[in-house]
Image 1: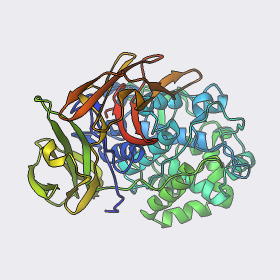
Image 2: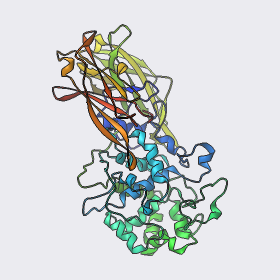
Image 3: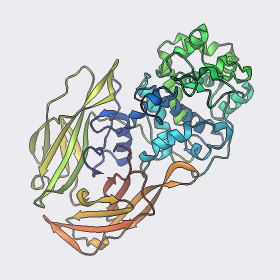
Image 4: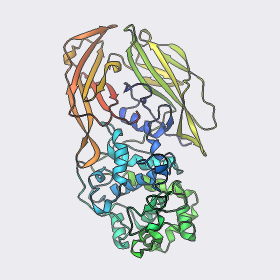
Length: 521
């Protein structure tokens, strides 16, 4: 298994708020959660949309499976349409979620864009913009549907309006114009052909959206949208689209090669533009085709406007703290609670006990009964196992500590000022915040901000707005801490996680993510 380094967040299986100490930072923490916690305990539920990879997220059960539509392919189409209007020489466009504002354009017809944005919207918050999710959708489609594990860098910035540049290759677009669109976005002819083959190893073209490409003979009770597949395995990321095209077997490369409407054979024009040399080279690669696709998609997802600088790749922690936070027990005594996640590769035995060390004392933790599974750690068709070890440590053992350790890994800790999760919550559009501090700072002098994702006009991508919470001057005492409280009234009910920050001496002392949506956190 290729080892990245990852970090995770607790889900609503535990409680409706998730607490401080997000390792190594909230953004990496949240995105790693999507990448790694695929199924079972603490699952992000992001993977549910493409499990199985023939699934169609907007319709459930047999209705979705019989639709002939494929969410994994849909996500890749969204990425491509957001990307292809980039002008790399001018430093504009690329992956910026502007596609959400552009769905009325004829070049973006079909439900793929709004279907995808509707599923992704609850995951948008201060740390996770829609543009990062547009990229992540293709990364997950690669990772879960049979391709190689694809690395992922965060840091994209959402557009605030539709892009000025237009021009997406359509079935009827001629070869010269198609290659101009690709060239503008930074792809030469060879890479344009290969990227098209990679993008068309999943999914179909549908009569419902493209009757000029696919006739109504494809519409059946088990294919209600009339999908004509690109290859014989529409839910598996594999090289079959290449071999079937070159051998004229199976789906023969799909409807954009074989359409009854000659003017709609855009894939055929592209593949034949160099005498099929690129397709022949891809065929010779065998499973190496998957590595080529990862490289090409990585170039696509990392094409961003010139003012955006992507961050380092999300890295995987085989040992990961989950929902670690200070709080108070029923006797109002300080406690440290949380969970440790262990990722065990397929074929290896998961641990049943785990040693947790703090303040020179070790605790022997027992594994929780519920486990999860992750594509990270897979071997062949088997996936890695995620085991969880919950703990509760008396504050007398942890109050002054600045770190704890598990299996040789050390994690930072602070109890001086923290957001008290048990009494920090959202009720509709009302936020109640509680801050615990052992410092001499008065409640009214603590700065608390919140960032809230709201619906916005013109796109299904939420917009994040910030405001400040004023804390009451009076406080309640608990075990040597002042508990400061305040209330904020929001403009509307949030679409996803609301993030709270408390500052001391101008620096962020703590962050809490409150689940105001249904993103499976």
